[in-house]
Length: 222
Ligand SMILES: [Zn+2]
Image (cartoon, rainbow, N blue to C red):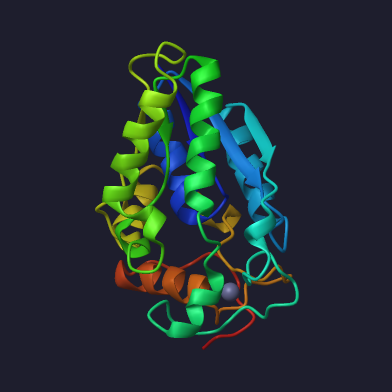
């Protein structure tokens, strides 16, 4: 049984990598270089793949439409605040998850994989439409049709966190013994995580809600 796991290097996808590696005999960790502002996440993904002894591949994605999002466009400031705020829409890279899942599927089909694993979780649904369950299932149907006879008939999208919160993911990760000091969540690429962007706030909230200390150091204590 082979799985291609999409690993950004953040806490959700790193937890996913360990979780899937505990279930599948053969795992390929797949990261995307989509012109993100910094390399921190990719380094974290490589660190955990090496620790688990699974191959790590970085696929380059070039999408013209990626300009204009704070995650990829250095001229757009990373907004501070919670995900609920309207300003956080600046962190949306439209269709990013759709493109990543489709690319991972193509690689998985060529590799004879049984599953593509993605770390989308319940907290993403509100702001990112391509992280919603109805989209994931519809894309899986389309991709299955599009690779008929050219992929393992078992190939499917495994999204075990689809209805799980970030705090619950973290709780699973501690059970799996994950060292979260080697995960990068912050949208900024500073020496320390900023502590103020939506991703940092969501991460800190998850650690707080399960009563664990975040091993990462932050530039802002707020
Ligand atoms: Zn941050």
